[in-house]
Each structure stands twice: as structure tokens, then as C-alpha cells.
Image 1 (cartoon, one colour):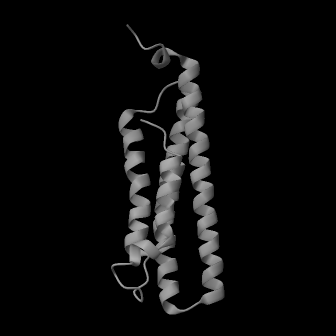
Image 2: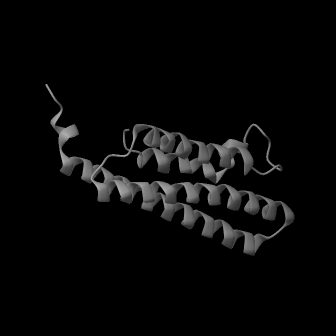
Image 3: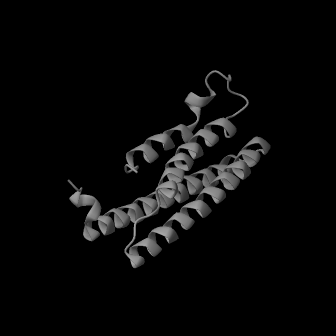
Length: 137
């Protein structure tokens, strides 16, 4: 017995459009988080905050570039009426889980006890965003 969902062109197109919307929401959340962090940097200042802001800028720049590549791949798949290849979807899951982990690891304040650093880092909340927006591969 074949899976009718896997053979339906309309279903595949709907999945790709859903992925396209999901990536746009992720990009919007990243831009919003970066703007909030930038405003905080302008208000508070300080050397440690500047280093943390530059680290965040570097991490987010790489991630935004990757998400734009995924967005472009999704658009091409929609126009060609094809699915995204499995390894691309799996790499997206891996990298979207990696970003908040890197942020928790590298964007913590040295003034906080190391045992509590992951708990006090707002980047840990990004895990919830990526989990709630993740579709199954």
C-alpha cells in the first residue's frame, strides 16, 4: 500500500510553503532578539557587553546566512515542484538546535557562577522557539 500523502503534489507544496513560513518566523525572531540585544548594549555599554554583542553578531550572522540559503532552497523546490532532500532537512534540524546551545555556551556572563550560567542566559529560551517551530523531517 502506498502512502497517498507522499505522492500528493499539493501536500508537498503545502509542506514547502509551511517550511518557508517557519523560516521567515525564525529569521524575524532572530532579528528581534538582535535588536533587543543591540538596544541593551547601547543603554548599558561596557567592555564585557561589547564582546558579548560582537560574539552574538558573529553567531547570528552565520545562522541568518544559513537560513537564507534554506529559504532559497525552499523557494526553488516550490517552483520546481520537488521536495527538499532529506539531508538538507536533517542538517537544518541539527543547526537550529546548535544555535541556542552555542549561545548558551559562549554568551554567558563571567560574573555569574558557572553552575548557574546556562539558567540565567536568555538565549536558552531560543530552544523553545525552535522546538515549537520544528516540523518533522
